[in-house]
Image 1 (spheres, rainbow, N blue to C red):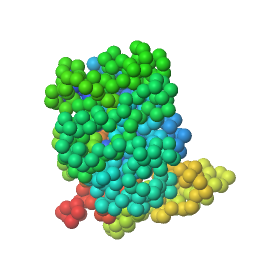
Image 2 (cartoon, helix red, strand yellow; image 1 turned 30 degrees about the horizontal axis):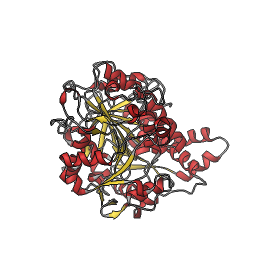
Image 3 (spheres, rainbow, N blue to C red; image 1 turned 90 degrees about the vertical axis):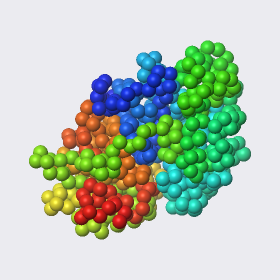
Image 4 (spheres, rainbow, N blue to C red; image 1 turned 135 degrees about the horizontal axis):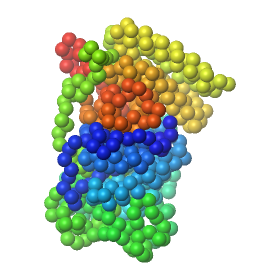
Length: 555
């Protein structure tokens, strides 16, 4: 499926657009999140997640009353060139869509966020470069990988997982995105191949974040280096100065979010002298490089400040890009409490025509050690039955003379086993075999991973009309399920069943893509990040949906 192809979308007033009252004019900030896999919204609720980004899909999502809009680029699953191409397609569509939404009075301002992995895996700095080249330039990019819900903290520039420097964990040894340091300035230099030296990375300390307020806003202004030198300099590096941010508490992130909102640039090109999103070059703006690259006045239209307090009347206002994990998002545009409890979310499970709950299915494609332990714990449940997708066999099929025909034959056999478990009243657990098989190069590894995810997604798509819910473990697994297996253009995040574990569904208002799967609308899909949770997380989710004699999750 081409993620850039036009697709049907919910019309005005549909379920995708939500029902919360709009914000008052002048303070309608939209936080646009480029998500490198579909699990980055794991601390939020009530916002649209787009799997396609044609004009109609974007326009409907920008009308949604949520301050957040997620663009599920899934770039982490792609090779670097393909990731850049996909991000280029997204920003090319997003720029005009933002301008149209502003002109129509739907939004006043926007803040761009690149949501990255809290264990530092992914295409850095490629992703922020792709965004900045088209929608920049920016004066600074904040690096905030702290994900407190998952035990990821940053102190004195060192990023840690449950107290261990993250490069010493299995995530640091990732075969595609591994790295050898947890000190963020050195990590930047290593990931950029030396193009971005550690000495050029600024830092915000815990003390800066604790003090917050005017102190933190002044620090951000001082650290942001306005772009100079015209279009040539912007083309070379448009993301501005990199600032590594410490954080180990929600209070600190709240202070940072307030400061970033207060400094969020006015999105009206007439007010800033900058080019509209998507335009760069010497003809952008109304004149010379100073107009295009200079800081924006700190005051907002009407004298309001995005943090809700009075706006400073003078001083530079830097354009900020944010590259962060999920925890900071809550502070960038605070939401009311999640309206549904975990039990109420689980009650979204679909029912048959007679009112009986339809069966569930669990999908496990993540191959990190934590996923292995969670799968083993889940399969110890007597209600579950395993259908193993042997990775080595799939690899041999892909290397053979008739890969499509042979893979289809394997899928037919797996489908028969899944149907047998459903008939027997057991919960199918479709999973890849454990361990990593050797691959000759990164391209082969990515092709194998996407082929496995595609095969599993197609199987779930075939069964979708008979299912009450799906639990999906792994980012690429979940993205492929939603976009290809179920053929969806967009879903709406309903909330969190467990910390960091989201439930999404496509409301029955028209977000099914052309050629989408029958039975996909209103099917609750639970997305579980590969690197999140304890050993019992998948089993706990099963308890929420199925119950087990009154035992509470975690007991």
